[in-house]
Length: 498
Ligand code: ME8
View (cartoon, protein in one colour):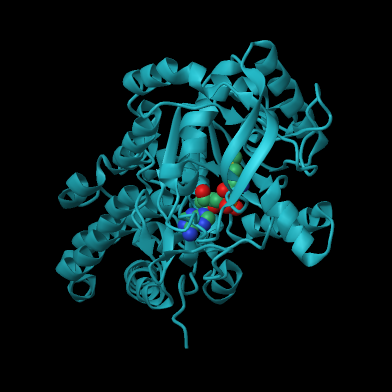
């Protein structure tokens, strides 16, 4: 089994912000979960360095696009490990190997008869690097995302014959209802297709910052075709990768780039005779004051600052817990602090420290290898399977919720059984053993399942439980790992801020 997950490649026109961190974190949770299943995983992220968004930003700063790309690509590259993202490769579209694949694949698309010369005339947003139809623009000819005035473009281009794929795309959507999720996005993409596809520019004549068109060096490829091909090109040269891993299992994207991934990308792959990805999952926007958080709007939260104060795990948890994955959601420092205190520190942190403290106090640190309390069988028995099933559907918030219900169940169990009362009565020693061991195993199960979300905290917690295995098998309720051996010590997992 292999699992190949991607994030969008981010524009290097500015520094990374929380929106970029969000998709990278989500992809990382999926990658880590699939590694726990023993699958061969490839997780790709990187930067999109060509086109107007980058050329214009460099021009405004009075530097060359390559210099801006080099500077900001490093910031994106540095963000991944700070988020605890376990990407296997970081692609830059200025990598010469990528550029060569773009030229090769798009030349094949032309040989296959899907490219012709024409004139484009219409609206264009240089921040989106997108050609906009009349019905897609706001009053005053403004971009609905960036609110800037659109430019009227007239250019001699080579066109990609998108319209040739009208019926094949309709068939794709009819046959594979899970090609795009959630359903609202599937419907949106399908209605765009049904409204009638028009051919789109494949090259730009006015720009020089891009991958040169091999059959006409006066042109560069339109940045979106160059960018989309990263998902394929990376496999041809990333260490440890191999084109046999194509097609991707999941492309994770924000809803701003739905059309490119759900319409242009499958059409381009068909034109190049390459297989289509299995799933495109579209998440919503993180909103700040009701607006999309975006570097061009300037309303961004700095992920580096949040990580410095609370750690990457807390950020990962907050974003996937507070904003249902697939929908828009507001983020704020107040909501972050509430989740941190009430859930991470009080619910998980206290459960872990109480359980370990009681095993140390009453059993000299060794939870007995005894049968567990059957009362929790129903809650924990099929949990790992349920989580795997939800993550298969990219339901990352849903999976976190079912795990968290068990964290709460264990906290209730402590209160119901009151081990501190049992400890006062020697005649109830067996009962105390059962309760403590049930808690330790419950903690092990939730820790293994939370590992993709909270890799650092669960490493510490599983370390204190003496468990080295991080595989999904270790989340089985029937496994006896962590019983019968001495537990270690644990510093508070989520210290409260002073
Ligand atoms: O579009 N909320 O790059 P980009 C949630 N280079 N996610 C957000 C977000 C927000 N407020 N802001 C950004 C591009 N994102 C192209 C992609 S792919 C072949 C080329 C995330 O730097 C989200 O994943 O504008 C969104 O789709 C992506 O960053 C856009 O990043």
